[in-house]
Amino acid sequence: MKHTAARTRANGAVLRLTTRVQEGLQEAARRPDRGDISTTTVIIWVAAVTGAVLIAGTIAVVIAKYNGKLNGL
Image 1: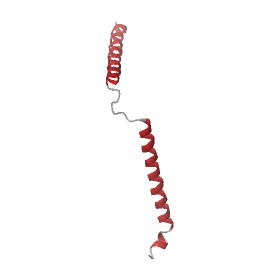
Image 2 (image 1 turned 135 degrees about the vertical axis):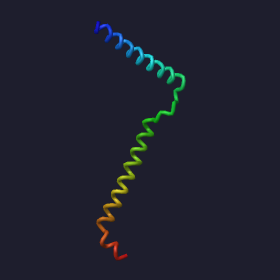
Image 3 (image 1 turned 45 degrees about the vertical axis):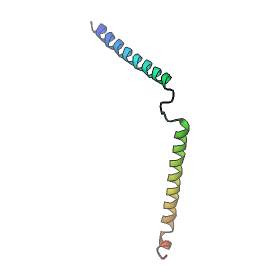
Image 4 (image 1 turned 60 degrees about the vertical axis):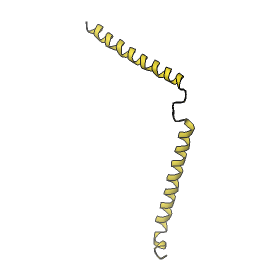
């Protein structure tokens, strides 16, 4: 008996998953540009953030190095 109930639940889960995937594929076919972020956009954002962190880090190092000399200005 337990095998039948487990099999019924598993079949229901597979059916729900299959239905959801099919709905997603139909939506993607109906609206090909759904506003998903492209790979290029992600690469540009990562490069921009990395550049900003490097610049900020460099400024912090320079200020820390010359902090005593800058106090007299």
